Image (cartoon, rainbow, N blue to C red; front, side):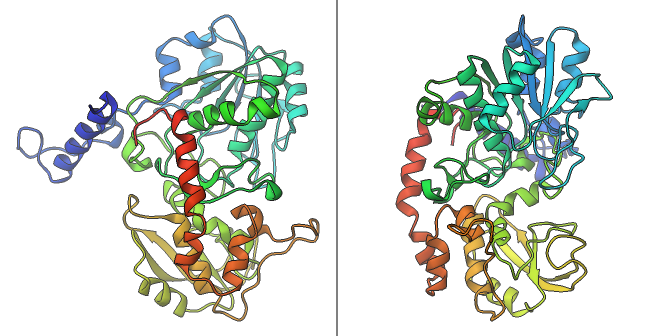
Length: 431
């Protein structure tokens, strides 16, 4: 029998289609509703406020968050929590880009006092598990609260901030609460598995490239699969789940406000393409669009041309078209240099496979003599950044040997199926 959540999803989709066609439920001309009014999705933060902070009563709390931790009126979790007078806040922990989000990639805001609340904000960017334990002790917190919007890709580092923070909480006997948010690119998993020899800050444990889980589901997965070994015990975990989200929904379906989680992730459209075009960070000769207004949607290089878009469109990839594009980055690769390439235009998020699309783009890009993988001298044993992004040398070596898109994607079919089955007990929402 279908679950209540499934019937809720079906009803909302039916109503959405009626409204899109201009007819209300009674068959009369309808006035368009705002997305937030149409959707019944409530985040973990929304539900915590509705409960009058019940899950945090009588505890001294540390909050891991960034500018994405907002309600439907864009009010921040920490600001509301502080103003409520119902929660004792020991400190705030700022991840990469900082608590208020003022730092660029690879940067932080440092430790200081938040101007709005007067609370101490601790710099937690790049914190090891041992450093997290120290931060918790310094702030003298009993419970750690996590509220950050993820974007669904293994190499987006906030999910590893979550992991290390959970391990530290388990080791030090602290409680951990995750305020869940929808995965903006949906609940389906795609792509290759991380392997033990290639873990790094952009992939610390064995999950697939597009994991298809919310941060709450990831926390449950971590707690069941990894913490017993790494921390010696599971953490006392509570996930305050979203209400009304279905794994077939993407950001545009939810009505949940979007705040850019990092400077180069400005829109939900960026998130849709990122698990695939993020691989171009591993290519030295091609810009992934950093330094433009459409990072990861604009991809190209000084030696590319219009043939790339022609070849990609000829592949007939599902849910996507490629616009011939020209751009000049203002920072990062090829600053001030005109680049030719493509703009990735997702036409159907539900049939679009970002990782397969990224592989197809790499296959066609390798036709150009200028194509060069990024190699880092600081890691001579594992110099290729693409290997860290994809979890092993397999994709790189297959493409170098002339593999087709189908051959490359087929190589991870079994491990993807195994991961999809392994994660099933930890899922909170229908798929």
